[in-house]
Length: 312
Ligand code: UDP
Ligand code: MG
Image (cartoon, rainbow, N blue to C red; front, side):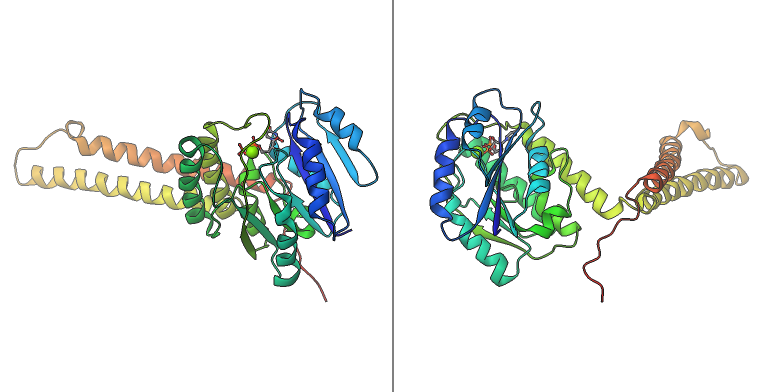
């Protein structure tokens, strides 16, 4: 089978039949399966999916709403196609983009092709502008040159989705997860974007705060997840050194003044003393965090998982 089309959805009943026929019209030249993942919808979405179900149209229904990441993860696990495509259910992404994305993977050797909603049809103030800022940050942190990291429409070589684990709300950073797993050839394709026709957006402004925090976590995990002491130890040593130098300075200054019979302040009377104190304590605490981190990393089940590309 050529393609697995994964569609995560939460309360999108009105859109589904139209989406289905749009996909069928766009993918005439391929063999494919559709995998609808109903993320705990409270409307009629599941009924609609039940009606469409067949040999090549599958449905997975969550007991409650777990979020888009969980839905994608479950879809990835079920996918059987040679190339896996994700698509939002709300008719904002056009399935007509899929054939070109598939061609890029097959002929140009991309591991992953992400859509780029260059002319995005959402609210300019609440979505488009923050999204630009967010993507700029994501580019700097991840080193992946994508304009629209969190675009709903993406195509992957099947290997990629079988070897990454999307959890929490990490669906925003799948390209970063892929890169960290060793799938570094990541491309993008400009895609048409439509206004939402039915229902409403499932994500509010909090996505940007949470998205940023997730980005920081991923950055930390990818660089120091397996060696936390390298991070905490380095900053701990620096802090400790700063505190140490200040302490020595305070003592020496006092001794010198004393020896020369000059006036001198009590050690606790000067601001530097408190700064030194804070720096030394912080240094010790950072070290402590490092040791704890090492213990956590060592006892993690996946402390030594890496992926082998091939053997001869
Ligand atoms: N979605 C989901 N679970 C959620 C929230 C959203 O499966 O908890 C689906 C949603 O139904 C849609 C896709 O994720 O198919 C993208 O969501 P949405 O269109 O609300 O995002 P936006 O286009 O506003 O960024
Ligand atoms: Mg949408």
